[in-house]
Image (cartoon, rainbow, N blue to C red):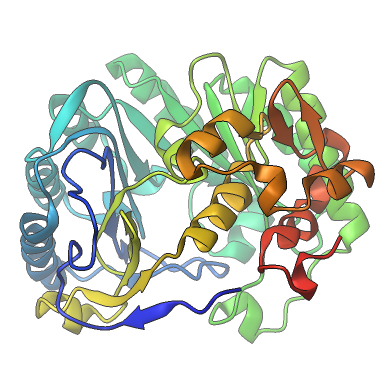
Amino acid sequence: MKSKTQVKEDYDLTKDCKVSIAKNITAAYIHIPFCNSICHYCDFAKFLYQENWVTPYLQALEKEIHTAYQNEYLQTIYVGGGTPTALNDAQFLKLLKLIDTFQKQKNYEYTIECNVESLNETKIKYMQQYGVNRISIGVETFHEHHLKAMNRHHTKEQIKETIALLKRIGLDNINLDFMYALPNETLQEVKEDIKEFLKLDVPHISTYSLMIESNTLFHICHIVPICQELDFKMYQTICKTLEENGYKHYEISNFAKKNYASKHNLTYWNNEFYYGFGLGASGYIHSIRYTNTRSLKDYCDGNFCLEKVEMTERINMENEMILGLRKIEGVSAYKFKQKYGKEIASVFPIEELNKKGKLHIQNGWIKIPKQALYQSNDILMCFIGEENESNKV
């Protein structure tokens, strides 16, 4: 792979950009790093909630947004964490007012991540008042012993009550996170979880196979992952059952009913530009991908950006394939040529991968065959590197 020019400098994201960014960015991610408790598998930028930390953080967030945002009309806004609803009611309202400064397109999507134990009717009504129209809830599993092992504190009844409350108030565009391959989990338990998710009748479900990351309690305690064969069976079962029940499998880990695919996540998978605001957030503005600091002190002192990386054309094309092939529909050869002025097959070993059954080419679209999705990481590695050993299939 070509080397990346890495720079640590002032928070000027337009520096080195060759064209104006004002007309190109339609998405923003905002990170809220506070949680009421820390999950044993979580490696995101997060801290245990302390009331006196929130005000300086929101002030810094407002300053960062004011510094970088160019008043574009955004199609998608996504507030994640951490746990945004860990803020108290007054702080949460202040956050919503801050985000309300963004201009929005007519058919925008505005998502906030929530945990059921910190979501109440007041916060739901605030969200409705300020234009939030999509909710993402970390359910993970319905089995209490697994929830306890993960250090999550909701119950099955709380989940049902929260979904019912959201629907009653009118926020019915709901995503539920579903985690599987938990320590010592059985296939039967996954099947039971799927049934419970289906009963809630929500339009979107995101699934995640547990990854034991460094700097998590699971890793520190040497928790052993389940075997790959069982993980694969769980994935197959989830895919088959959700599709049989009206969910379209539109990305490796995501399932949606008609017209409910996540517009914001499609921004990432389509390799499009987006702002990233907040602690540890990442963004992509023209030729620059940047990552913010994970130091709460540095962030609140106004030292937002930790690293900026200038993307070469080659790296952009690699990202186009690596991200785009996560989508079940794959990558459009026509759009690739429009974007880069090159045929995909002249850049990457498409034909070789097709002959080996790792890619499928049809009607101008290049995608990973359904039977190979579980091995997608191995296939995607074929798109990293320029005419070298890592490019071999």
